Length: 195
Image (cartoon, rainbow, N blue to C red):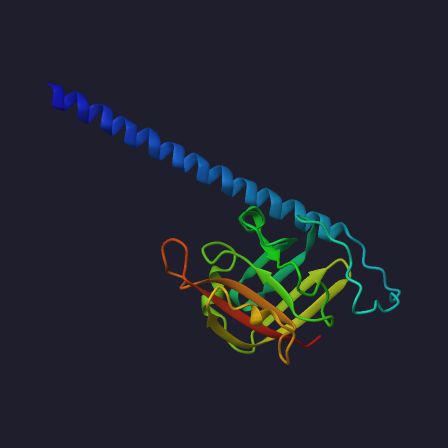
């Protein structure tokens, strides 16, 4: 009789534990969907002024705060569309893609670095090819990039974010894509501005 009671309580604990984990997952998913929707609404409501702004000296960076919406990244062939926020910490990557602090903010001013999780927004990158089109829409306008190369590096290799020919936009995610837990490497996509 004692064994039956133990099995009942153990089974109940498993059911309630599973329900709690599922509830946490759904809460995180709804938070992410909400953040993506609000960011997209803000970007769509932002008016791009047709008058050209005077050029900004390369040494002056616009001031942005962590969590601000910077734009929308799209890769049409992969049906990938994600809002980009300032910052690349775990809280930002939970709700979208993150602009890597210290990298360029605008096309033409250096190498823009954007990161996202491999098991959420950047999952489709496993099927990316050289020449694929990447679009980045910001309040100051839209830019188009073409993939020039992909590579796999160690997490400590930050040279992939340096300005170099063919590196106007760099996407970063964990690798391998099928790895369970903290992945040991990073998958890098380099792209050059085309428009």
